[in-house]
Amino acid sequence: MKFTRITVNPDQMGGVPCIRGLRIPVATVVGMIADGMSEREILKALPDLEHGDIHEALQYASEAVREREIPLITS
Image (tube, rainbow, N blue to C red; front, side, top):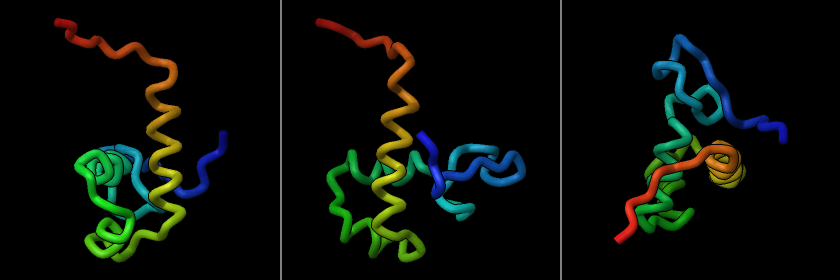
């Protein structure tokens, strides 16, 4: 899958994946969604974002965890 809205620059934000070269990490957008914010709320809080940025951030996060095993604590 090709990501056109996600950029990684070692000289910006410590090289973490960001949205379109902005100083908005993918993790920030995904975290906002996880916290229950609506797309409208996210776009209001981060006005430089576009609808497509949010969608691609979720796709990127999905791909990032697809091939990795994350340890879970079971009760």
